[in-house]
Image (cartoon, rainbow, N blue to C red; front, side, top):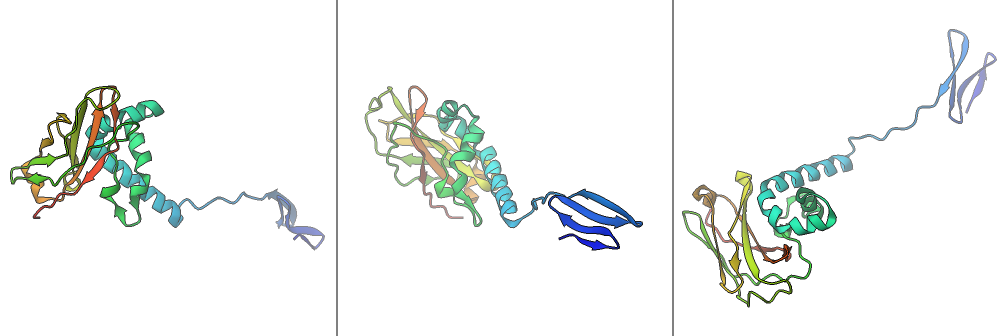
Length: 206
């Protein structure tokens, strides 16, 4: 509230600040309140964005296959689609790899994956329940399996195999076997449609 000081105003009225300088009456506009860009909530949000971005970079070769059709339908890059569908998988406690999606489905169902095995040389064999390869509405179905090694900041994607085969094989660098790996599998059909990806637990002796 403004008040009189030797006949002059000092204080705030509305958006105007009155003050006295060198005995003269002065006034200026009240500055607008600026939000602190470094609040805990904003810092946490930036931290999650960084983690999702780094994860997308590691998995880019995989999501270019698994998320291509979803990204094309939404008219965004696969990188952005990955960030969108995985925003809830990254929290204050870090990344929940079991919730990561590298494939986004529409009318395609994933196969049921079995227990994977890995050799010391990095050969991964992932069994799955076979089904007729032509079961999909759009034609021949194939299965992909992807491996992510966060310590190496990289991923690998298998060659596609028919849904009738019952086994997907993926070769990763032997050095990866000493690090924690995360596996994902999805089905793709003619027309670029994919199923939601499935997290495949892998028991490793680290």
